[in-house]
Length: 545
Image (cartoon, rainbow, N blue to C red; front, side):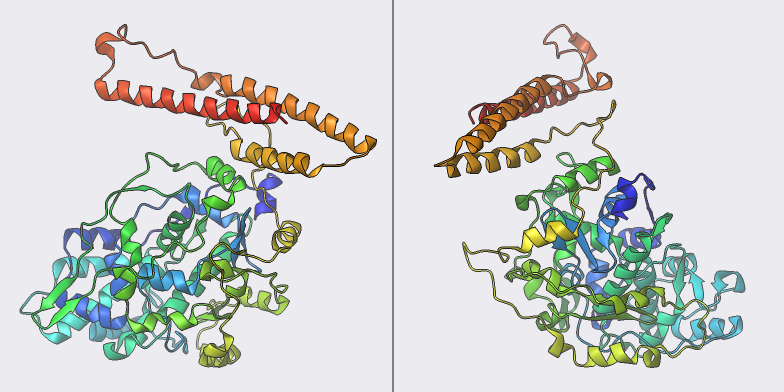
């Protein structure tokens, strides 16, 4: 997709479907009974429910998709490849990794048969207008939760029915929403008939495989919608990319355990709940695709956190054994019924604290998987169709990648990794270097700082030079001084006319400005002055070369 952006073939923003929004709002207004939460914990979905809802930034998601490579299932940033891994889905949402693959046979049913199926397992019979083949309108489920909530007097059958409804809403609304986002897939219900068995499935790999597929589809030119776990993707980006990280205003509300009864206490929510507290985006960017592109184009090593999780934290220590840390680095299939995608842990070793080496070329045979889905395949036995990958998952422990660990003060990658990486990827996605006449203008300080650092190293290394080298070095100094002059001039005139304001007046404004507005203007002026100072200092560095 990045080459299409550069070529000017696409410049649109993807629309993230948020089918689970109504459900999230309902849960916030009317929390589910602890008995229902107990069953959701046993089913493996408790962590996702406790992580709540965040506002999705379509522009941020689009900027990430532009850097997604379907052949490797990784994002290509200037600092290297990175991706959402099994570790992320286990720690952020607490989903089980170990277990049976989520796969089976598609069973065709009539509308009446689906109605009977819902009556048995969900406790109500939806009308025909709510059903579309095996898909049920999510609004009917949320309405059921609103009108018939479980209480202290509810029997166990009613509690299980509500737990199934909540699980369906989470799966089709938060974890695996399709690009439409308005319906729930009833095929998930087969894994919930016996609630005691639901937690024995590898929901983490299923959700991650579905996310990979949605990213691969959205990366195609002409796509306007995207499904999948966008909530997870956004908090993954917030956790790792420092220029995106919002400021936490309060990270304690709603983070405690839940008492079911005197004999049962549910644990605190997983890591992902840290991002559903009250957040401030005052010091970062939102809703601007162009700026997100430029931020990613100019990403420097310190702006990406390879290991953001505190493995000794209460959130991590309270996770169930099914999150299976020993499987996080497996190069393995991620199976979600008809969907199979590959988890390429070997390409993002730094995310696991291992030294990154040059990974092998992508397997071209994996490309055929992108064309396989459920459409027009009624009655297909997917466990048989994908038997090769089902067998691989059965022996997943043999697929675990083990490499040397990064030592304190030691290298995080082999010497020639970045040289190789720059040869096989596109670092810059922004389609043009031409300045805009309106909007935000980056100062490119991080780019120029790299130039200054490299030139300093070059000058220091030139102990003995011949006449030709000396002439070239002198010409380089002249060029640097020209750049320095441009930088210093630019620091005073970097804003387009549409952004220029009169200087802040002290007393002449009188009653026209409130105290808070005056404070914001002063902060803006101070920030501008600091940026001017940084640019001038960088220009001085160039002049001293």
